[in-house]
Length: 458
Image (cartoon, rainbow, N blue to C red):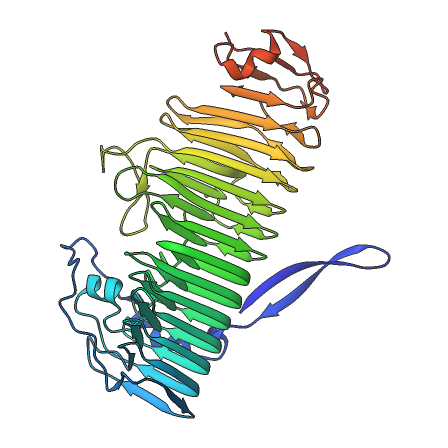
C-alpha cells in the first residue's frame, strides 16, 4: 500500500492530507512468494545478443483480428509464454486472467526477446488488453512487446509478479507498450515496473500505481524512451528511475519514492556518451536512504530539466556527478578499481518554478552546471567530493540562492548584477578569474546580503 501526501488548500489554512493508493500487494499473500523473491540471477555471464530460444506458448495467435473475453490462460513450462501475439496480428483480450509459472534458462533471451514473459506481443502486431489480471511467478515478465511496428496497450488492469527479472510492462527491439490505469507490484530482484531494453523500447504510462520490493527494481527502467504522467510509485530497494546510456525520460505529475542509491539515476555502462535527457515536471521525488542524492550521474553527459518540482532527500544532497557506474548487483557505485575506462560525468541541470534544498556534489573531474529561473529558490551550495571538479551556477533576476556554506565556482552568472537575490548567511562565493564567463565581475570583491561576499578564488 502506498501513502501519497497531498497538500490541500483550505479556506483558512494549509494542511496535509493522506491519500491511500492501493496496489496488488494489498490483496496477495506475499508470504507465499518469499522463497521466489529471494532468488537472484547471475548477469556476469556471456551475453547472447541474438535469439536462440523461440518464443512459444499454448495460446498462440497469428490472425488478422481476434477478440476474446472472460477467459483464463495459464502455462507452467520454463522458457514459455502463455499468450503469444505475432505476425502482424490484431488482438483484443478483456476481462481475463493470465497466469504464468516457470523459469527462464537464459536471462539475456528473457531480457532482449521476452522469452518466458506471460504475454509476448511481437512482429508488427497490435494487441490491447482491458480489465485483465496478469500474475507471474519464478521470474516471468508480465507483458513484453518486441519489434518495430509492434504495439501493446494495457488498460484498467492488475500486474503482479514474483521472482527475479519479472518486469511489469516491458518493451524492446523498438516495440511500444502503453499502460493506463495500471496497478502493479513486483517482489523480485531487478523486476522494474515499466521498462525498456536494448534495442530501444518505448514505454508510455498514464494514471497508474507501481510498487517494487526487490533490489534493483526501479519504477522506470529506461533503455529507449519513458513517458509517464500521473504515476505514483515506490521502489523499496532501487532508484525510482534507472537510465543506462543515451535515453530519454519525461515524467509529469508523478510522485516517486526511491529506497536505494538515488532518486533518479543516469549513467553509461559502456563508454561515456552524450545526450541522455530527463525531464521532471509538476512532480515530487522522495529519496529515503541517508546517503542517497536526488539525482545521480556517472560516466555520462546528460541534461536534466526540473520544472515545478519538489525533491526531498534524507541526505541533504540534490545532485551527485561522478566518475563511476553501477554494479550488476546494484550494491554500490563502481569506480576506477572496477573499471578504468570510465570518464567524469558532465551535467547541465535547468531548474524552473521550484524550491529546492540541498547540495551539489561532484567527484573526480566531473562538472555540474546549475541554472535557476522562473522564480526558483535554492537553499544549499556546492561540494567537492574527491579530486578536482567544476561547478557553474546561473541565476535569473526572479530566482534566489540561499547559501549554506562557502561555494567555489568555475562559472558564475547572475542576471541581477547587484546580487540582491543571494542571501549569504555569512558564507562566500569564490569565482575563477580565468573563466571568461566571470568577466562581468571584473575581478572585484562584492559584499552580499547576510555578511558574505563574492570574491576571486585566486
